[in-house]
Length: 496
Image 1 (cartoon, rainbow, N blue to C red):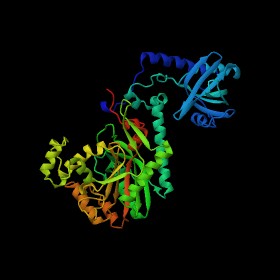
Image 2: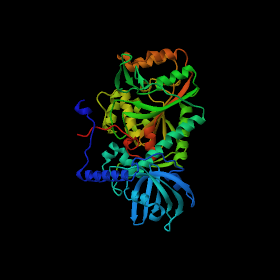
Image 3: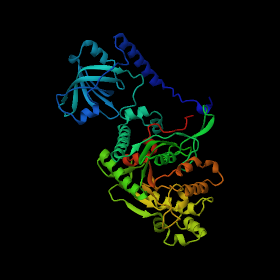
Image 4: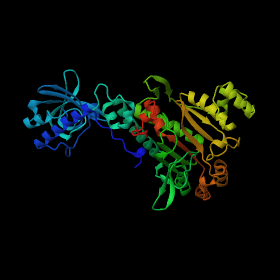
């Protein structure tokens, strides 16, 4: 194993070693009481969060959670048990349990998992509480929890040790609970409208459906090179050819490219295709999907977006209808009404000298306009905007516009300063598709999926399609400033 591949092992500090040693001693004392420190089956009637949400006095309940707070008042113990969804206060008194159970309790602390049984009541201070009649130890934690007041202060460590982040940072835990609910509601929305969920290959002979650098591997059993997919698009279109009228996949894509606040090499995407649709019908569906999910999960349509310091940097209003505008018109709004009448040299000069947009030497004329669009339109857009009819060369898998062959019938949904979702009138002419793919590939024709083109020759119905980045949608709806805050286990460099 190379040095770069060596797994990280973080040694405990001397203070932590001492605490671990004390906890190991408690484990042996628990065993001496005839109790298994690592639990057994414990059936529950509710969870801490569900009980708190639907609380009433006099309920008999069984629930489990981690001890996250503990207040020792001698013969009366108040403690809070919680899981990732939330917690609730419990009260244990010495007179309510046996001497053996009280002795066991005195060996427990923050971080341990317990199951409790009892009845509900409200304290004099108005706090919903479970009066514990009995408890069961489910796991004795050897390592202490992060400090209950300061949590996990090292942000990098929050990403590397996500379990510690989740148990000590309620805001982080809430984001991931929300992400799970968002994905559930997306699936429900599509199922309600007759879309069928499918799975297509992660390992592919040719990485198609987008222009990106793939991760490469080798399939020993089949003795051939393969790549992790960069998009499922071409396989989903094969299913349209096969007779699936409404199909979607919600799964992972992989791109061997940069990492920043908005990009992770392993990311989650929803792709949806509907026979008989086009880019406008898909825009309608996307508008309805996002607003429906937002209302179902959060009960609102206005979302603040935060920077890394927790300050509000912009507000996104999802109220319908969403604006739709042509790409060219948006560029002219920021670059001048005569932008497309200029020579390529004049466009480059205006972009650099008047608009103050940095233009790389290798960018062609289409790329210059795209750079102006990204910097002066996309990055400044707060609330939803469908950017329609982009340059034909940018999207080889979409149909050309019947009135203007230089652009394609697509939209890019932009909000919160970034693209969230493209949608196409899908190209289903096999001859036109091959020409467009060859133009995109240039001399690297080995990257063309000829089998896909052959599949189109069997007849694919006219269709609309979309691909939405789930991580970016979750960032938008939770206000997360970095994609790492919405991916449970983001990719990171090894610590030296």
